[in-house]
Image (cartoon, rainbow, N blue to C red; front, side, top):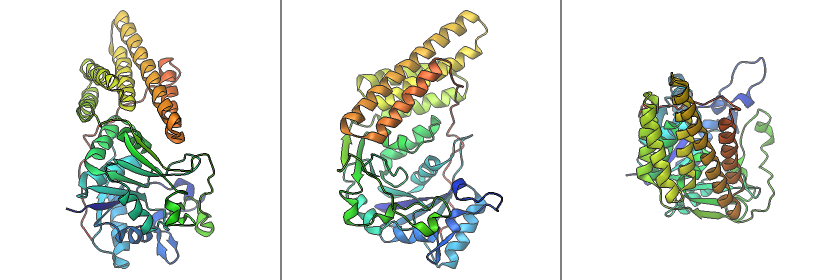
Length: 370
């Protein structure tokens, strides 16, 4: 069994890279220093992993990339085609797709637009994993490189699966949901292996191809941050997956009870992120259920209960933010407060209700190895 895998994420639309009124360009195939960005990504990870997976969003892209790898004599790379669930797409679906198939104990995720990522940096992040579920680089201003992570496969697979089933598209939720994380300082640790920090140069626009400027980030956080916020609540994650399935089947009563049960257990364990998600989804389920009621008094009752659950979720997200604030986890605190504000707005009827997205259409699908 491979101990290390790389999951290269290359299914985006690259909107910032495009020029108005010109033909769409696949950023991963744009040449830099004599090679397509995709080839740079593969070559940068090849030295430090035993397994390489490229996740794309459609079959045409898979075929095109396979031909490019063949022209550059790159072999032993597996392609996977993401199968988005309803409207949920993006990196988190690619991460989940890769984790489902990867045979490794630990997986390194990276986008295909970071051509100067140094193998020594990747190796150092793997070596820093130990018993940590997620390792992610952090800048002094608290910003995180949320697509450049080392993930402990079995546990993070369940985390990503649960998040996708609940329709949560942001990859930073994986970090929050892991509970046991290492935010590794770019300047205090990684810079020793990459003095100019070129590893984290992203090609977001066509101008970036000539600038190749490292990120200039200053801030109060100079060291790494290790957080251990408790055991991963695996039974509750599976309960949340069941509840999401019930919701998608229109079984709102059973779904709301399952979400409520999960929330109660998680609140007792002070597992704030997962408790807040459970209450949030209980609230959304009750609001959906209220719209199905023919009797006005029943609809009003379910709506009141739903809003109360959302406000409780908001309070729990606020507690989660305080934990990150105390530890100087600036970015994660911002994300928790954003979720708090969203729940409050929904409870107060100031925004539309979002939908759950089922995982049923997300299956393991491997392409031919090159």
